Length: 165
Image (cartoon, rainbow, N blue to C red; front, side):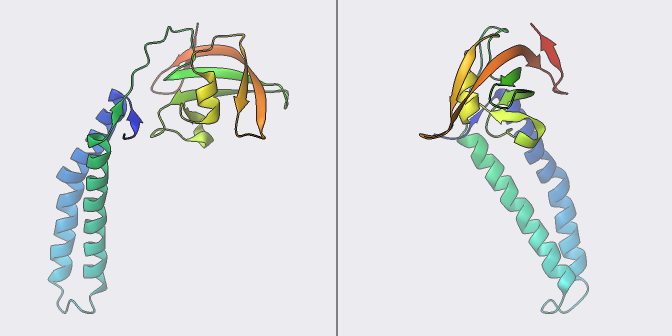
């Protein structure tokens, strides 16, 4: 079973693959050819650096293509007022007496420093399917857990803005 992704994730990855194949690959090949023209390859730093860049690009393309080939497509068909994929959720953390807004996303898009939390993470798993006002136990492991209360749920847009329901 591969990485869980939405159709939008697949689209963005395919855009990167296309860009790398059509633009970056051509630039990398041209850089290798130009560096090769400078003479002795055994001590030609530019040649080795260009070759390394070209190989890294090809490696990235192969990685992204494998990611798509093995992807498990997920869709969230939950009602708009329920926490789920691509929902922005405002949480109240009881232990800290603090509020935080996060967006639930697939693990491929997860980035906790930007508030993008994977539905595969402990808090993501705990929140999915709950509504505003629900008090939820987030079980991190056998010894660590905490409670959160959902204060608001909205649809995330491209700019991560929140539309409240």
